[in-house]
Length: 213
Length: 133
Ligand SMILES: Nc1ncnc2c1ncn2[C@@H]1O[C@H](COP(=O)(O)OP(=O)(O)OP(=O)(O)O)[C@@H](O)[C@H]1O
Ligand SMILES: [Mg+2]
Image (cartoon, rainbow over all chains, first blue to last red; front, side, top):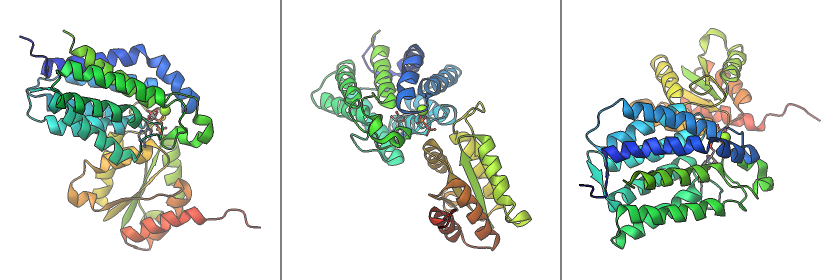
């Protein structure tokens, strides 16, 4: 019976869905990155998650932490841009919280994603409104936490997180970038949606979709 | 001896910079370049940097990393997290112009200076003037 939690099968399904949604949006992400970066974000993310999916499919897992850890290690080495160490750290820190866990409910996943976000901030030093993935991830993690407090299911929590991530992503449009390659553009970075905030939204969407079944 | 690890988005750039810097110090110094993504394209890879660090840590007392931009810094920092504490304590990242920093660092390293001193000298490359009025 499906208890609505994220188990190993669904965690692997989530990786597959991330790969699919990133592939489907590869050109879009690259287009966003060509406006304020070096036009490689879609290619980077697609390469990273293709390798991550290969990795998790080739392994047997007893806990979801190990799935997240393999994703982390693969992203760090294969993405190639800033998103590699950043998302790699996100999944790595989250994996520590999920170590030895067979499944995660909303509360545990919220804690894991909070750890992940803290890792991203510790590494990249981005603050809110610096026009980065942090602007989408932060409201999403906050939404997960408050949904957990309200006793919602994992699926309901992810739905709220997704809505907040989408808002955070759109809110990056008027921002002036203060971190990453886009910061070299200064004021000219305003008026464009941040590619990393967009991929963060897509990753959350994939987690949400993975829990559909 | 303190080794220098040049981290660039292009392997060619990193090895070219290493070559230029080495010319200043000859056999006494150790400068290695690492760069490019896993497929050899433009980018950086935490895995590649980690392996380069392991090799250099075997040969050197300490390592100063000189990253070029953006993900070179993030990937280098992420690679440090995979080292053991003892190894990690022998590596510093310098915030410096990468070519000038590498040249100055290698000259300093070849005089037998400490890890901290080599990093400091690399960072002083910020104030180098090329054109004087
Ligand atoms: N310091 C940072 N903190 C948080 N997010 C960051 C930081 N730097 C970049 N980003 C995010 O990464 C995204 C870009 O990812 P991408 O993989 O295209 O890296 P890149 O900028 O091309 O890397 P590189 O530094 O190698 O040029 C940005 O849109 C932004 O959201
Ligand atoms: Mg880019």
